[in-house]
Image (cartoon, rainbow, N blue to C red; front, side, top):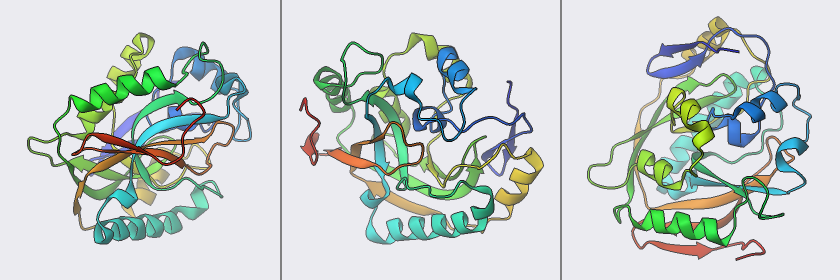
Length: 266
């Protein structure tokens, strides 16, 4: 399938395509899939447990920016705007979407299971990530939230970098992204887009309908926020829209990791 994309008010909106299944978070949030993952996922439905991907492993970890890391006023404004948008789009979204609002920075991998299996994430991988983070400027992110958009599988709130001399979301993504040569072309064609996911579309809706829904959402003021920490979180690998568990937070200024819920190897 070759999806079509359309620019709308600085947003990405999905064009007409055959119906496709919803994909797990590691594909959906980044719009990146290896050929093997795409082919195995294409026959799966929303009720699939994704066993061909997780291979019996239970927790998949992701580096994110939590909305609670924003200041109280900015965080509440973002939560309120997202709640209103979700309510307006509710008839077109899957029900029981439990994932907390966040900005995905990069996937990490599976926290449990055989370290020799694909996408394993353990002490060595965490050490690599921490070294990469420590090479970045010791300063908070400067971000702007505002504007709506949509991927083919999920509507979102736009997030933009406003950093001058400090770290950026793109720098964090590049530092934390595992080297995956087999995905180089896919990533080049579908680059990282910072966003806050509102939920997941319940079907592959036509482009015109998606554009109508997105353009009908309230016009937002834009919120500026300084964000001083990111988080390593995980979710149940067999639950498509389940909640995130925070394992650790990393202080961008102090360059320190503070554990909250350690995996077995930490």
